[in-house]
Image 1: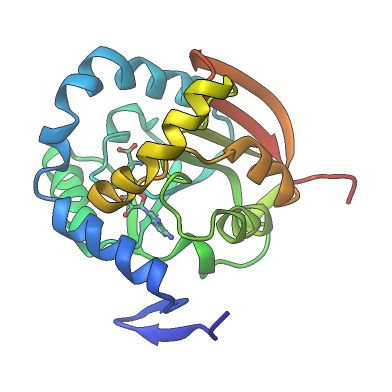
Image 2: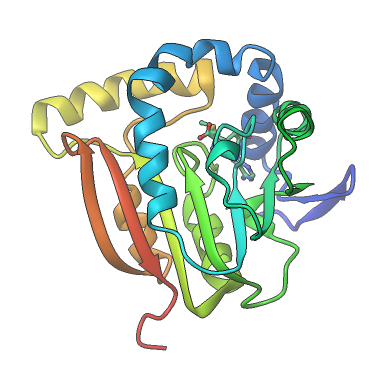
Length: 222
Ligand SMILES: C[S@@+](CC[C@H](N)C(=O)[O-])C[C@H]1O[C@@H](n2cnc3c(N)ncnc32)[C@H](O)[C@@H]1O
């Protein structure tokens, strides 16, 4: 793996995967909310609410904040920091935060190389992020590092279904979704969470076994 390099104030792995995915999100950022409008109203909205019902703690980090679709669930009075590596997505999030009066520190940052000290946050959340992070285990290890030992990680993710036929279909369609949206639909994200050394506390199926709400903590016997 290539050494991290500094670029536009962001430490980046500078491997092709990262630049490609970042570029895709920059390009789709103007249409992103519109593209997901229907799914957002019918499904995503109530799943997002469940993420925030599972949150605790004062200092919160949201990774892969995107256009800021979770802002309406942010509790007043919490210290919230949110990062994304796409300038385009972040600029949408900034406009949304301003227009809705949401207090959040928005930073351009790669979850694979977080610029925070060890154990900086009580709670870390992400919604539909680890399907597109180029090296998900590296990103999840970073989350583990910056989460306080008594803290909590809450992730809403879509994953590869266990059903053999459906799983194969997802595998076949994956190259298309990566090309169009930078999104992998066949990742085993719960396994990735465990492989990163996080301890899975709860795994809830929200849509068959394809969409999951996962709560984890950073203490894995350490
Ligand atoms: C599918 S979108 C989800 C956005 C938002 N969380 C939501 O629920 O609408 C994935 C987001 O993760 C961001 N992302 C992907 N890889 C990232 C990385 N390595 N570091 C930071 N952000 C990343 C993308 O730029 C994009 O905004």
